[in-house]
Length: 132
Image 1 (tube, rainbow, N blue to C red):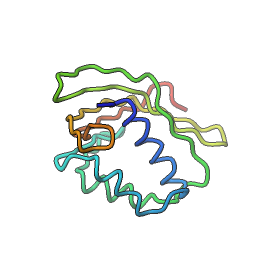
Image 2: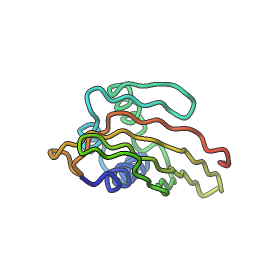
Image 3: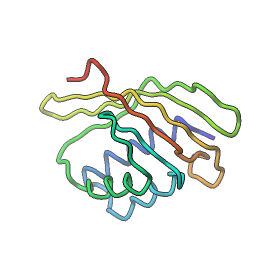
Image 4: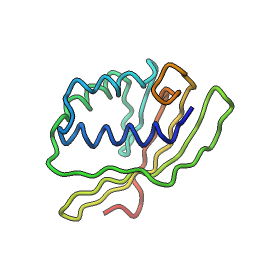
């Protein structure tokens, strides 16, 4: 189970998908790793189901002309062999100097059938105080 690789690969997918450098049908990789009960609380406090999240990402295909997404400060908070809880900081950068950061926490379930051995069960994002 490689939770950190999963975080980094999924965010690399988001960058490529939003830039349109990968075909729209590759959203299947994203949808596949979300648990049927997946929910996310976005940085503004809105909660979305798995289906709502997939639909929002699907609508974002090729919407950006230049964007960089990366994750840092990965920390494993809990691993009992079945459930993992991890934290990381997500950075979005644009060439015009805009930058934002989200402090994120994710709950994973172990699943050897998934690309990195984990399924996303829940995510929670909060705007970082120092984002510009």
